[in-house]
Length: 197
Image (cartoon, rainbow, N blue to C red; front, side, top):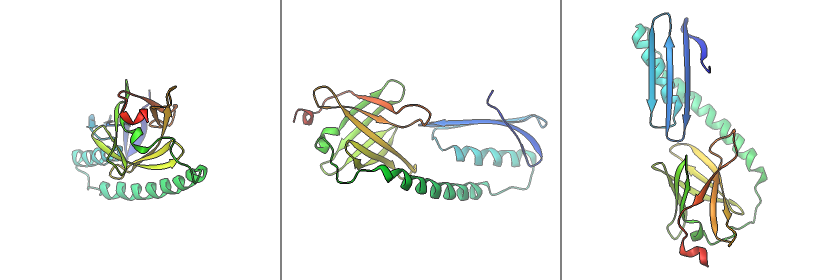
Protein backbone atom coordinates (compact mmCIF):
# COMPACT_ATOMS: atom_id res chain seq x y z
CA UNK A 1 0.00 0.00 0.00
CA UNK A 2 3.02 2.27 -0.21
CA UNK A 3 3.84 2.38 3.51
CA UNK A 4 7.48 2.70 4.46
CA UNK A 5 8.32 0.29 7.30
CA UNK A 6 11.44 1.13 9.28
CA UNK A 7 12.60 1.95 12.80
CA UNK A 8 13.19 5.24 14.54
CA UNK A 9 15.51 5.17 17.55
CA UNK A 10 14.65 1.53 18.20
CA UNK A 11 10.89 1.89 17.69
CA UNK A 12 8.85 0.60 14.71
CA UNK A 13 7.83 3.49 12.45
CA UNK A 14 5.30 3.33 9.61
CA UNK A 15 5.21 6.37 7.30
CA UNK A 16 4.43 7.68 3.87
CA UNK A 17 4.95 11.08 2.28
CA UNK A 18 4.63 12.80 -1.03
CA UNK A 19 4.85 16.17 -2.73
CA UNK A 20 3.82 17.90 -5.92
CA UNK A 21 4.02 21.51 -7.10
CA UNK A 22 2.46 23.58 -4.32
CA UNK A 23 1.95 21.14 -1.46
CA UNK A 24 3.24 18.10 0.42
CA UNK A 25 2.01 15.68 3.06
CA UNK A 26 3.50 13.19 5.51
CA UNK A 27 1.68 10.58 7.60
CA UNK A 28 3.52 8.58 10.29
CA UNK A 29 2.59 6.07 12.99
CA UNK A 30 4.43 4.62 15.94
CA UNK A 31 2.12 1.60 16.36
CA UNK A 32 3.53 0.36 19.68
CA UNK A 33 3.20 3.79 21.31
CA UNK A 34 -0.17 4.42 19.56
CA UNK A 35 1.04 7.75 18.18
CA UNK A 36 -0.01 9.14 14.79
CA UNK A 37 1.27 12.27 13.07
CA UNK A 38 -0.10 14.05 9.99
CA UNK A 39 1.83 16.96 8.48
CA UNK A 40 0.39 19.10 5.68
CA UNK A 41 2.54 21.74 4.05
CA UNK A 42 1.62 24.33 1.43
CA UNK A 43 5.12 24.09 -0.04
CA UNK A 44 6.53 21.11 -1.91
CA UNK A 45 9.47 21.12 0.52
CA UNK A 46 9.27 17.56 1.85
CA UNK A 47 12.46 17.88 4.03
CA UNK A 48 10.58 20.34 6.24
CA UNK A 49 8.02 17.63 6.94
CA UNK A 50 10.74 15.11 7.86
CA UNK A 51 12.36 17.56 10.24
CA UNK A 52 9.04 18.33 11.93
CA UNK A 53 8.02 14.66 12.10
CA UNK A 54 11.18 13.54 13.88
CA UNK A 55 11.12 16.58 16.17
CA UNK A 56 7.49 15.85 17.17
CA UNK A 57 8.31 12.18 17.83
CA UNK A 58 11.29 13.13 20.01
CA UNK A 59 9.11 15.49 22.05
CA UNK A 60 6.16 13.10 22.41
CA UNK A 61 8.43 10.27 23.55
CA UNK A 62 10.51 12.50 25.86
CA UNK A 63 13.72 11.59 24.02
CA UNK A 64 16.84 13.70 24.01
CA UNK A 65 16.37 16.04 21.03
CA UNK A 66 18.36 15.57 17.83
CA UNK A 67 19.28 18.58 15.68
CA UNK A 68 17.20 17.38 12.75
CA UNK A 69 17.25 20.79 11.08
CA UNK A 70 21.05 20.67 10.82
CA UNK A 71 21.04 17.06 9.62
CA UNK A 72 18.54 17.93 6.89
CA UNK A 73 20.53 21.05 5.91
CA UNK A 74 23.67 18.91 5.57
CA UNK A 75 21.77 16.43 3.39
CA UNK A 76 20.39 19.28 1.26
CA UNK A 77 23.88 20.73 0.69
CA UNK A 78 25.11 17.31 -0.41
CA UNK A 79 22.05 16.78 -2.63
CA UNK A 80 22.46 20.24 -4.20
CA UNK A 81 26.09 19.50 -5.09
CA UNK A 82 24.97 16.24 -6.70
CA UNK A 83 22.20 18.02 -8.64
CA UNK A 84 24.66 20.64 -9.90
CA UNK A 85 27.00 17.89 -11.04
CA UNK A 86 24.14 16.15 -12.88
CA UNK A 87 23.00 19.47 -14.37
CA UNK A 88 26.42 20.02 -15.92
CA UNK A 89 26.27 16.56 -17.38
CA UNK A 90 22.73 17.17 -18.70
CA UNK A 91 23.83 20.40 -20.38
CA UNK A 92 26.18 18.40 -22.58
CA UNK A 93 23.41 18.29 -25.22
CA UNK A 94 23.14 22.10 -25.36
CA UNK A 95 23.57 23.48 -28.86
CA UNK A 96 25.58 26.70 -28.80
CA UNK A 97 24.98 29.64 -31.10
CA UNK A 98 21.22 29.09 -31.52
CA UNK A 99 18.48 31.71 -31.26
CA UNK A 100 14.77 31.54 -30.35
CA UNK A 101 12.49 31.38 -33.38
CA UNK A 102 10.49 34.45 -32.24
CA UNK A 103 11.30 37.78 -30.57
CA UNK A 104 11.35 37.21 -26.79
CA UNK A 105 8.21 39.34 -26.33
CA UNK A 106 6.27 36.81 -28.42
CA UNK A 107 6.67 34.15 -25.72
CA UNK A 108 4.82 36.26 -23.13
CA UNK A 109 1.27 35.17 -22.37
CA UNK A 110 -0.92 32.90 -20.24
CA UNK A 111 -0.46 29.15 -20.64
CA UNK A 112 -3.01 26.82 -19.10
CA UNK A 113 -3.29 23.16 -18.12
CA UNK A 114 -6.54 21.74 -16.68
CA UNK A 115 -4.78 20.02 -13.76
CA UNK A 116 -1.59 22.05 -13.23
CA UNK A 117 -3.10 25.53 -13.55
CA UNK A 118 -1.71 28.60 -15.30
CA UNK A 119 1.83 29.73 -16.03
CA UNK A 120 1.95 33.46 -16.74
CA UNK A 121 5.02 34.29 -18.86
CA UNK A 122 5.95 37.99 -18.76
CA UNK A 123 8.25 40.20 -20.85
CA UNK A 124 9.51 43.42 -19.21
CA UNK A 125 11.43 44.69 -22.21
CA UNK A 126 14.67 43.03 -21.12
CA UNK A 127 13.95 39.53 -19.88
CA UNK A 128 11.32 36.81 -19.59
CA UNK A 129 9.96 35.68 -16.23
CA UNK A 130 7.09 33.38 -15.26
CA UNK A 131 4.64 33.38 -12.37
CA UNK A 132 3.41 29.96 -11.32
CA UNK A 133 1.59 29.15 -8.07
CA UNK A 134 2.66 32.43 -6.47
CA UNK A 135 6.32 31.88 -7.35
CA UNK A 136 8.39 33.78 -9.88
CA UNK A 137 10.81 32.00 -12.20
CA UNK A 138 13.58 33.62 -14.23
CA UNK A 139 14.09 32.49 -17.83
CA UNK A 140 17.43 31.87 -19.52
CA UNK A 141 17.70 30.85 -23.17
CA UNK A 142 19.01 27.29 -23.44
CA UNK A 143 18.87 26.57 -27.17
CA UNK A 144 16.36 26.96 -30.02
CA UNK A 145 12.91 27.39 -28.36
CA UNK A 146 13.98 25.87 -25.05
CA UNK A 147 14.58 27.99 -21.94
CA UNK A 148 15.66 27.25 -18.40
CA UNK A 149 12.96 28.32 -15.94
CA UNK A 150 14.55 28.80 -12.50
CA UNK A 151 13.48 29.80 -8.99
CA UNK A 152 16.53 30.16 -6.73
CA UNK A 153 14.54 30.28 -3.50
CA UNK A 154 13.00 26.88 -4.27
CA UNK A 155 16.24 25.65 -5.85
CA UNK A 156 14.06 24.49 -8.74
CA UNK A 157 14.95 24.51 -12.41
CA UNK A 158 13.09 23.14 -15.43
CA UNK A 159 13.82 23.12 -19.16
CA UNK A 160 10.75 24.66 -20.78
CA UNK A 161 10.11 24.03 -24.47
CA UNK A 162 7.86 26.36 -26.47
CA UNK A 163 6.04 25.11 -29.58
CA UNK A 164 4.43 27.00 -32.44
CA UNK A 165 0.89 26.54 -33.69
CA UNK A 166 0.03 25.91 -37.39
CA UNK A 167 0.09 29.67 -38.06
CA UNK A 168 3.62 29.98 -36.71
CA UNK A 169 2.66 31.75 -33.47
CA UNK A 170 3.85 30.53 -30.05
CA UNK A 171 1.02 28.21 -29.03
CA UNK A 172 2.16 26.13 -26.04
CA UNK A 173 4.91 25.37 -23.60
CA UNK A 174 5.95 22.03 -22.10
CA UNK A 175 7.55 21.56 -18.67
CA UNK A 176 9.02 18.33 -17.21
CA UNK A 177 7.32 18.71 -13.80
CA UNK A 178 7.01 14.92 -13.41
CA UNK A 179 9.96 12.67 -14.20
CA UNK A 180 7.82 9.55 -14.74
CA UNK A 181 5.60 10.98 -17.50
CA UNK A 182 5.98 13.08 -20.63
CA UNK A 183 6.43 16.84 -20.27
CA UNK A 184 3.29 18.63 -19.09
CA UNK A 185 1.92 20.73 -21.98
CA UNK A 186 0.33 24.11 -21.19
CA UNK A 187 -1.78 25.58 -24.03
CA UNK A 188 -1.66 29.30 -24.65
CA UNK A 189 -4.86 31.03 -23.53
CA UNK A 190 -4.42 34.54 -24.88
CA UNK A 191 -2.62 35.55 -28.06
CA UNK A 192 -0.38 38.58 -27.81
CA UNK A 193 0.04 41.20 -30.48
CA UNK A 194 3.64 40.10 -30.90
CA UNK A 195 2.44 36.78 -32.33
CA UNK A 196 1.31 38.56 -35.48
CA UNK A 197 4.75 39.96 -36.23
